[in-house]
Amino acid sequence: MRETKKSSNEGNFFYQAAFERYVGPAPSQNERQVMSDINDHETGLKSGIQEKLGRKLKEVYADVVNEPVPDRFLDLLNQLEEAEQSDKKSD
Amino acid sequence: MTVTASFKTELLSIIPNLRAFALSLTKTSDRADDLVQETLMKAWNKHHLFQAGTNLKAWTFTIMRNEFYSQMRKRGREVQDSEGVLASQLATHPEQQGHMDLKDFRDALETLPDDQREALVLIGANGFSYEEAAEIIGVAVGTVKSRVSRARTRLMDDLDVEGESSYGPDSISTQIVGMH
Image (cartoon, rainbow over all chains, first blue to last red):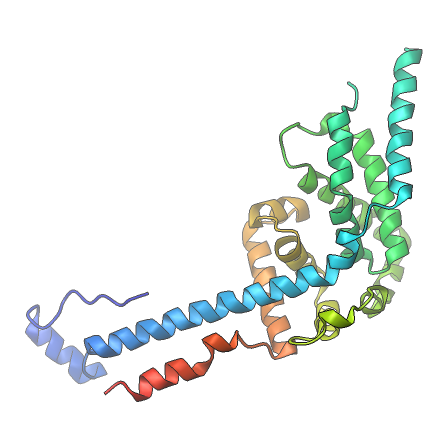
């Protein structure tokens, strides 16, 4: 995020001067750009890490997710379906 | 109301995800598949409660989670004793090793508090939104967000993870040094 400082030098001069005495000179355009780059860098770093963790997490469960569905579950669903159909017939 | 063929087909298609989620809850593969079986039966019997067009995956995950925790309450604390089993239950492929070691990652995942791991698995491995995960777990969206964030922070600390080298500190420090 870029820091936009609208009250630049031509604004409230006395306020600006007091402010600078208190916290030091306002950052120059160049300094602000660098701060902004650092923030962008941190955001990028964060999303890079999240992506990396996400990939690892998927990898942990990849084996079981990629395995074909075991027969016991196919059989189960077929049985449930058959049971329901025979229930209907007996109605 | 009859169970439509599409319900069965859709249920079949999410079995792999159900098995993975079951494994993240139970941590042992035989228990996981028993939990999947219970879940499928419950989902089938309750299918008249399912609103077509809504998220079947989230719905069945909710059923599974409720089933798991009610079993756990029945069995007492026994389920808690399976620490460190996830790593040994999941086969390791040599080609998956390298950059960040998968085994280290599993170990770190294993040591996360259950609520944090659950939130992370729902968001990171299953691609649920924060809202969907909140619905499944039965907590506020903000709670899910903070659990996921704490889980990530802890994993990063445990694993000493840093960003990709392309994001490394060099480009920035160069800029700072070359600033004036």
